[in-house]
Image (tube, rainbow, N blue to C red; front, side):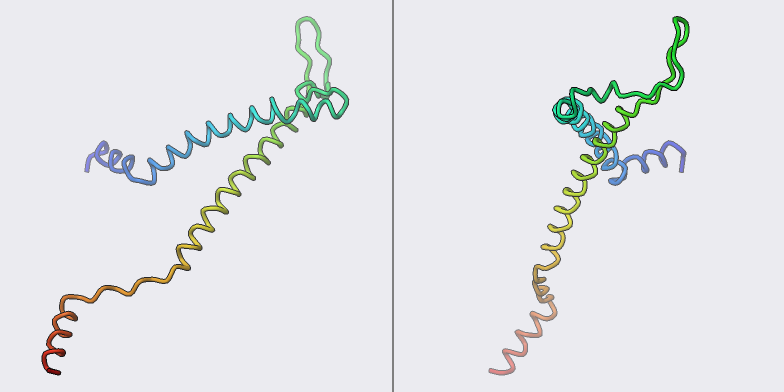
Length: 132
């Protein structure tokens, strides 16, 4: 099998396509959550903490000069990223929980007995004829 045919067979498998869709949707969801945290959650939280903008929370390690930028640890951005992560993790948890409950309901449904095979139907008819 040529390399291109093998790659095409790999790329067209269902799992690879599902993964690609999940990555695209996950990226879009991540941007939505980032906007939620940056534009909706953090500004009121900053106001409650005395007008603090979390993006401006830095620890200066080395002051800058005209030629060199200051070296800082941006712990405010780190706090925002932690909030992003918590929201995304909670949303994924809720989605997985919902999927698991649906699977559990499906598993709890009683399975219908399998339909009789052609042989079983014929044997039943023969039995009924013999009874008569």
